[in-house]
Image (tube, rainbow over all chains, first blue to last red; front, side):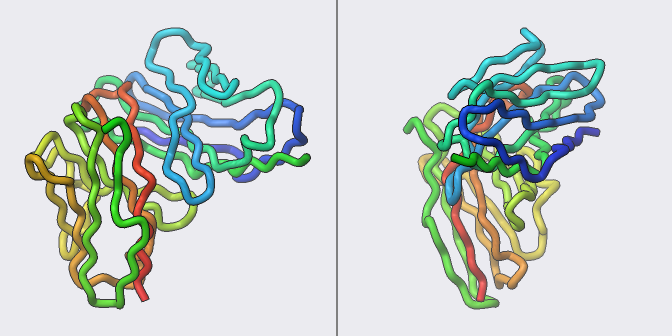
Length: 116
Length: 115
């Protein structure tokens, strides 16, 4: 079975400082992992994804994430936070091999606040 | 189109009334998914389609919820006799493939308020 745990429900950083949003997953097979961002009253936008290629994945807006199988983690980072990064972030897992219709399993989200 | 379109943006229904939501997937995407976001951070999978065929409906409340994806028409999600607990944002997503590893592209959502 697949599941995702986002360890922090809220993260607050100062503008210009690094961002770390933590995600741990559990998957019976080979996971695909995604980070999506949701700005207020908007839909979900894909930031980046991991699908068994390079373990360090670069995404849009300067975000990146590292897949660590031994730690079952896929933490999202950014070297320097910008005010526009304030949003809700969701970590998502799906199963690369199972015939489940690419069903997504969502974490409960991390709300990022950026302090000027 | 290049974006998933959802209409209406907001929908208000009295308890017991019918609600119908629409979704136009990205052109060329064969798979459509519906999700319900009840509380701010909880996404519940409802149903997925491969073209006009139901692929996975394990998340659908069978009694009052139904969905269709007909050729040359937007997909729809219909709730008969809405209840207060149906108040949520309903997201539609589309994907090129059912295989894990393919991202889903999400629409902006329809906010349903049941009063």
